[in-house]
Image 1: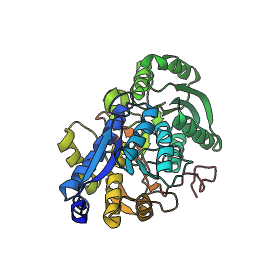
Image 2 (image 1 turned 120 degrees about the vertical axis):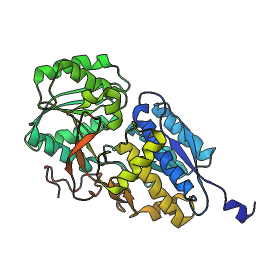
Image 3 (image 1 turned 90 degrees about the vertical axis):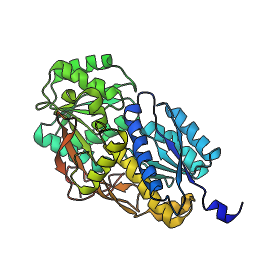
Image 4 (image 1 turned 90 degrees about the horizontal axis):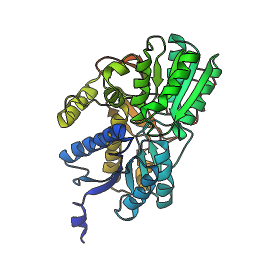
Length: 380
């Protein structure tokens, strides 16, 4: 094949988000964000005259499938770049594959931090970009007694470890802690809510994920607790889960996120308009969708510069790269390969959106190992 023929070949990339199973409520939106960005890029002529071609697989919310499909994408489909994963367990399944075969995983989900790989670009928030500020706001507004409830896997347990340290080092206490299996049903929360009613915490801190999130909030609503007095505060509850549980059920609860649909800037207004024209006026955007969208654009910008899918070249070129994302200006931190993102805290309202109650003045530098954290709620 001549070089002139090669120039028209598409850039093939892998896409791994669950369209079925208990994680589909959020991962389906990440898939949409990814494809929205790819379509916009291709509609504008592609990258150096070549379209991006996504090779999409559905892991079905099974962590083992992510590793198997990542290997299939790299070995059989020839994809060295993969966009995908929500849970940390699915990321951990893909990690040895991309490291062994020298691929590049673009991971658009908040996570527990304390990880670094030269084969991953992390575009979701780390604890210094969400947990630290959320803890401060909660202790100021509601009180110092926390109850933890999470899904039973890596991310919730590690996030709770960090939050527990923040709380205890600032005069608070954790009065209870419970976990439910991934994909748990509504009945799993009945004894937990019974215990919460008994110990009367000031705040319920949730790291429950996926479809199970809706059952937690519905069980809370069944008890008739007032979120103005004892809210559920989360790192993982987005507009997608609020929609699934019911706007009235989500009303009054808080989430820390780099992005909400209600962010007020022209870039976001354009993004929302394009997204809703494609998927429907009643389809909300969310932080995981937005990260999935902007990371494809960061990749495309880098690819235009390198004109090569070589992992080492892309990795080197992307460091320090900036992009005007819907959340605001973001960049890939050259020290960590994590994104410098905005910190925001929102309170869900009756329209299924979040009223922003805190917003950082600019993006917050990624600090996945909490090196700048002085064991207090003021960040150095």
